[in-house]
Length: 136
Figure (cartoon, rainbow, N blue to C red):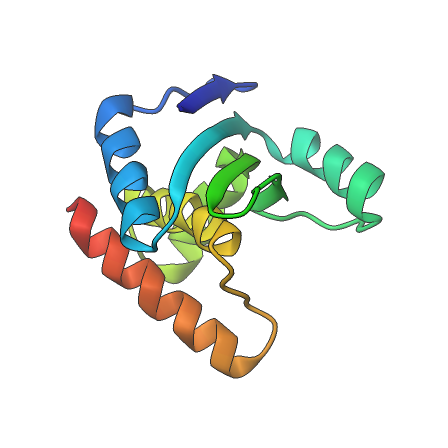
């Protein structure tokens, strides 16, 4: 089950559309949907998590905690709405496009995709673009 939680003044429009989209991506990647929680927050909230759990004193757009068991995807995906807005402006894309990218990025990590090497980043971007195209 996919759930949405809000720790900031933001509400995801059309939650059911995003739920169907994420569920289909999980199936397409050969996984089963478990409990996935999206938590939308601000920079300060996410920075606190970043420092406390990852020992990183930097702003980020997403932090995901992966509880996947075998082929069943489970996890908590924290997204800074502030950071997504800034990144969308910086990259010259719409807020919805950047938000979708970050949302599917967390899921792709749970499916085993990495983004540490240049090759990994290329594969991750390709998958993100593929799934974003499915949403629009």
